[in-house]
Image (tube, rainbow, N blue to C red):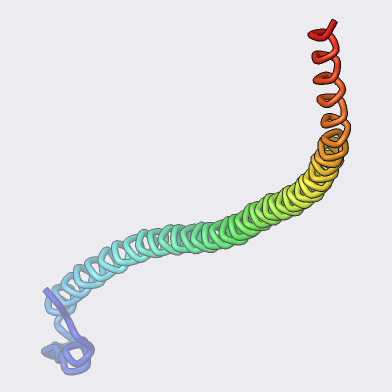
Length: 167
């Protein structure tokens, strides 16, 4: 049973000789006590439920804060990993470029060395050709010089043969 403020204000008791009817007042007091008791019980239950809900809200807020902190720290860790990976990648690329530059430089140096060797071999070939031509020329001159002497030798040989036959 519920009793509202309006019910209380509008409640009228029948009058008796020395005031209101005691039975009606006692009956009304019992009803009012029951209503107030129920209201107190409801209020107590509601307060307990509010405490439970506040506790739950507090737990959810703590969880939410923990999740936010975790998310922030995770994001920071991811950002740090990205920066670290980027730096490491840059170092690897710089090292690879340095190795490539060194390899190219070695190739250029080797190419220059080969060109120098080729030029040295060309000079050596030219000197050899010049020396060979000189040698051949001197041998040719010797052969040509020896032809008149050869003619004399042959002439003398033929005279000797003649003289041998005459004897």
